[in-house]
Image (cartoon, rainbow, N blue to C red; front, top):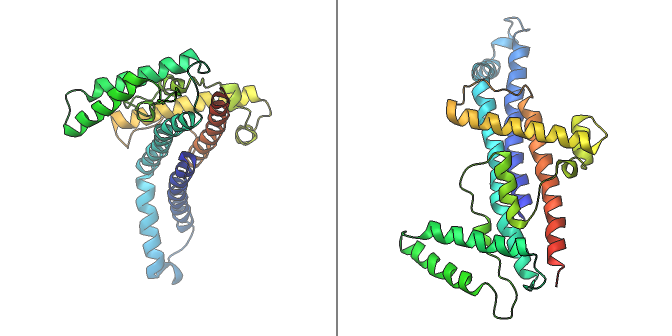
Length: 261
């Protein structure tokens, strides 16, 4: 199962929760138009009304919590796809001569970081340190092909601004170009534009808003007022489309690297 498949399953769960919340709000709006007749006094009706009123009161909390969950799916995707792509590069058996210097140096750097963070830990960490030290010292497999450190590639310290996202993806010497993101016909349709430049610019702007709001919730609580006016359902849809396009771009990039001999 690929990282994208896992992401799709997780984001679908968030989408289902969004639909539930929005349906409950619709029930609340409908209940206001009904009189206290026999039908409205049924147990099922009263149950639905209480449920929808509860969600209506706490809609901001529900929306914010769902935004955090949706962004968590994106973070999990990045944490998973970097090791996945590193393993693909190892399978490709790239020689040092064919490996770009920046990719080779990135592999050394992430391994050194992993070594640094493992020092002084438990017995498990000591074991990991010994294993990674062996890999780091060798730098290659015995047959001369590069062994990419998938664990090091996937290590994320928690920060996740746009700049951090580019930094993490840069471990694979991949640069996120918003025009490339805007090439997605689905993203162009989402923003109702026909230009990849416009779609890319709008994607960058909305993603920055999502990250800013996610961090605001983390610091000020789920009841805080967000800056973006986009409905939560649209935000979740955008994050799904963004990750799908990012995944497609990453796989083309890694396939290009893997073809080097």
